[in-house]
Amino acid sequence: MPWPQPLDPLGNPWLSTGVAAIPVIVLLGLVAWGHLRVGIAALLALGAALGVALLAFGMPVPAALGAAAYGGAYGLFPIGWIVLNVMFLHALTVKSGLFQELKGQLMRVAPDPRVQVILIAFCFGAFIEGAAGFGAPVAITAALLLQLGFSPIHASGLSLIANTAPVAFGSIGIPITTLAQVTDLDVMKLSQMAGRQLPVFSAIIPLWIVGAMAGWRGIREVWPVALVAGVSFAVMQFLVSNYHGPWLVDSISALVSLGAVLWMLRWRQRKESPAFIDTPVSASGMRWWRPWVPWLILTLAIFAWGTRPVKETLDRMASPSFPVPGIHQQVMRTPPVVRVSKVEKVELKLNVLSATGTGIWLAAVVSGLLMGYSPRQLLRVWWDTLMAVRQSLLTIAAMLALGNVTKLSGADATLGMALAKTGVFYPFFGTLLGWLGVALTGSDTASNVLFGSLQRITAEQLGLSPYLMCAANSTGGVMGKMIDAQSIVVAGVAVKAHGEEGKILRFVFWHSLVLAALISAWVAAQAYWPLLQSTVVR
Image (cartoon, rainbow, N blue to C red; front, side, top):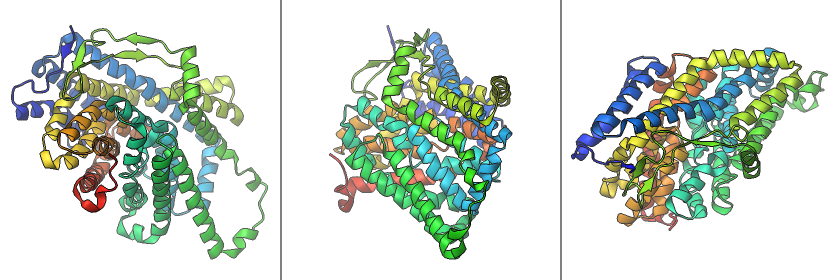
């Protein structure tokens, strides 16, 4: 008989909510203010989560241990597999000297670091998010910014802030398509609603990251470039999401934004230096494309692995699934978190061939061979990379174990129910629920699975559009992406800031909170302000 998750295990909603929040408070407190290394903090918070699950929620011991084991395994594969192989490719380009060439080119095209962060963290990062997600955009862009001379904290923090605008439509639209599945709502209407909430903020994110980096003076000096990047991205995000669907929103928007920024930079260079267009191309200049080849191969591989035909073909070749002992079909979610009671299936899927990390590994190997590495040298660099990031991989495993214990014990649902009881203020706090979901799980998709059904039920009970609040769960969630522990650890790995995760969290925390409050206010305005109610899909 499956164990039903209790939503109010202590018989007092306030007390149950407070106890459910203990693991989150322990983790954030130890990392941000206790200055403890995130790996140790994650283990202590995992212990707290297990204590809450067993003692307060009455979760069976085998189920609690199974949830932790599943989360740890998922942290290593597929999440850790992505991070490891991104860093493998990065190490190959550094050792070959191509990264230095790329750095020189970027500094010539965009010598201003404030423009570099727009090009790399926002434009290029959004393209990678559209194809892959799961930490790859932050890992790649943070590593690029580090090599361009950014400090580790700025490189990681700015990449995290930039990786918000594209998240709701990331990984070929998976967050929205998954939301449609769990809520039984029309996927096109959900895409349209999200596309009427997020572009307002996508337009200002480049300005925001410049402000986070250089303050108001920095914004005043480069606002035209930031505005071109943000507005071009936002316009395409609205058009594609409303007239095509969620699948190619990020890819198209990012390419248009990148092209617009490069065109503007070239126009400004020609205007400021007419000789620019007549400068002869040197012999080395004829090989300008060399440092871009590994990243082009990576982009193609990620995009290919993200398409359904490739993924389904590789899954048919090899994709075994193993039920996790103790937890598979042993936990039942109950209304009102879900519309009807649902037994949780917890299976470890070893889709080694179709995993995004495998596509990245293949791109790294092909790129390494083109750079002149021998197979033995490639193996040596891969092993050295594994040794360099092994502690961070274990930290990711601990963080995912914590997230899964919180989810499968029902503690996350208890926190969500507290926000769902806010009545007329629900559009504001319901959007914050999405933010909380991503901060806890590290994934907009997981947050939609977690709270999507609850959002629909609560919205219908309050007479609100279910499309408004279900989309708000996803768009509000993007602001939680910059503070989830998984993303912070990935960013720390990319910039080799081992033990500095607390500084990264402190750098981005208030940006996350303020942006989450702003998008929550925007959704509330759509719900109640007559001038904006026409934008709501019903």
